[in-house]
Length: 128
Image 1: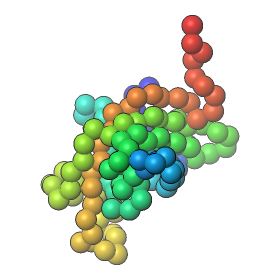
Image 2 (image 1 turned 45 degrees about the vertical axis):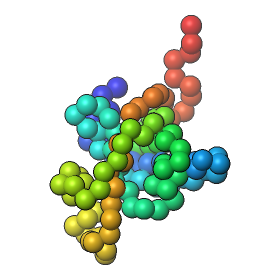
Image 3 (image 1 turned 90 degrees about the vertical axis):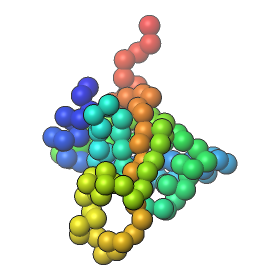
Image 4 (image 1 turned 30 degrees about the vertical axis):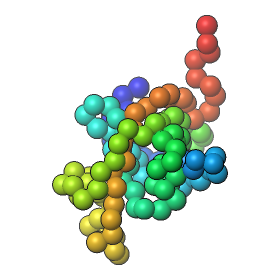
């Protein structure tokens, strides 16, 4: 699946799940990711629990449910590759920066490689 096209054209709701170094899990509603030119996925984050968890555990899962009837969407297993803040790229990609009630809040662009892609329901293709 071409994730760049999918997330540009598909509306829905996403949940990013992270865990800290001790395995304590968090799930948070996140907007559709930015799919970068190299295929990596990026999210804009504030320094809250999801971002904090990623400092000690780089693994995450993103579940995206498409708008509409039924259960269509994707589950992505992700591994953090890097992050940045205060750069022109963060400002350019931040959708909420222009309407947020705290425009001076520090935001991070957290970038992930996709390790596994699965449908929302089911295990995908069965192993041979």
